[in-house]
Length: 92
View 1 (cartoon, rainbow, N blue to C red):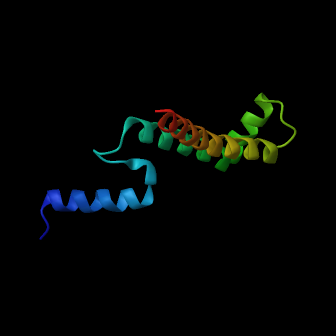
View 2 (view 1 turned 180 degrees about the vertical axis):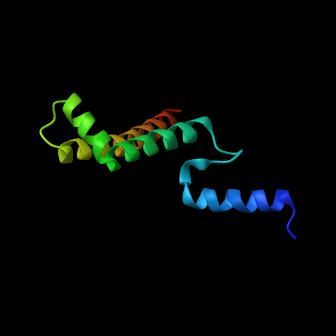
C-alpha cells in the first residue's frame, strides 16, 4: 500500500500536469502572478456568459471582438515582461 504522503505527492503531480499554473515551492512571485493573470483571461474568454457581460460593459460590437481583445492582452503582458527584462539586462 502507498503511504498517504506518496499518494498526495502523486495526486499533486497529476494536478500539476492538468493545471500548468499550479506552481511549486520554486515558483517565483512574478511567475505565479503571470499564471494567475493568464488563467483569468483564458477563463473570461472561454465562458460565454462572462464574455457577453464584458462585451456589454466595454461597448464592444460582438463577443468575438471581446474574445480577441482578451487573448491579445494575455499575450501582450507576457511579451512586455520579457522585453522589459531584456532591456534591463542589456543596459547593465
